[in-house]
Image 1 (tube, one colour):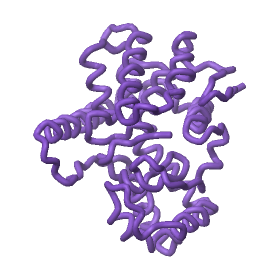
Image 2: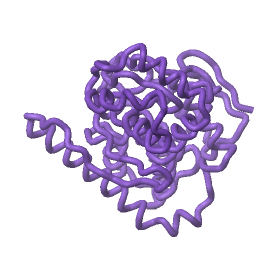
Image 3: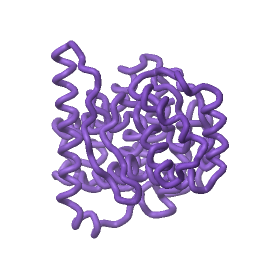
Length: 297
């Protein structure tokens, strides 16, 4: 239920936070595509610089979505969109063929073999736990990175993933990469844009679905396009108007990647919260995902 921009921009040094790098994908022949990649790399780099310069300010802001109860709620909503379950802790061992060009996707955030984050996770985990069951598959994960190939992986790899997910250390490693690569940068950028808890979730969900990639439909590029056209709350704009514009852009990007994409995560969840004026994601909360109703007390 997700499509990630093919090339990820962030690598993680365990317990040391976020460091940025720009990977070098196979060159594309079309000049326009190459220019789009360069612009998106710039968007991610500018976001990183923005976060670095605002560290002191961010430390003084309310936790928002990072508060324990709101973070739990965020992952319940995200679990409903990823695997139709609020019980997101059951997803650590889930792994399947994505069937959408991203190879195998598994774990609590849907790490994918084709979009670097699965490789980054296994590499990071193996540094701390070299004898884990997934270590033997690192050469294959590196070889298929950036493609939809499953060569060298297959059922044995999926079985190893499920076995390893029974260990607390691997679940903790998934949480660490999820928070460092996706949750924290999305929430912090939303705070800098003057967005409340709902807006912070909207950014987080977009980061998860679209990925921090280097094409025009990666999270950072979407954010820059919307900010260029619509004032953020921190710039004196209307928060609801900005969020509507951001959701419009995300929905357009979803359908551009797959014309029959189910857009419930926007239409009957995030947009519904926004229509209700629930900018702080107050509970009780009711939403629909793929025709099913979910509730958070």
